Image (cartoon, rainbow, N blue to C red; front, side, top):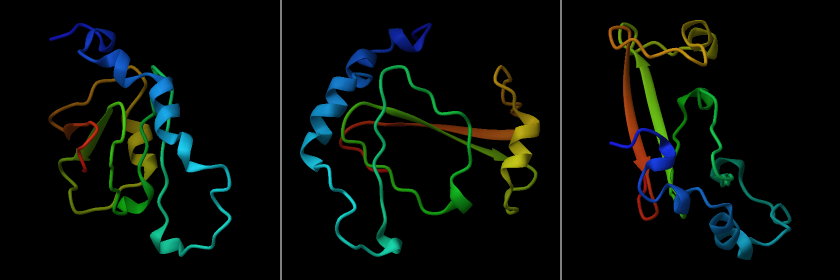
Length: 121
């Protein structure tokens, strides 16, 4: 097992901002010119090497589909064990987690998903 993310196999290929530019080059610049229904709205995320997204809750637990075109995305799903059916707000997590904290397995269950090109999750 690698000691750091930088030692993971293919990390540098997955983190290359050059690859993101190549994949998105043909999209064009006038993305919002045509009207489209809000219900069908989707968006793409692009980042540069080493970027980390802080913990957050996706809007209302709405259906999120991930289709990775290039690179890799590590997706962490964290649920509170004692309240699985209750919707929790961002405030719940803010009080429980700090930047250097660890997830208490007695309180939370955590899944890690690696999304790579060709996978749809």
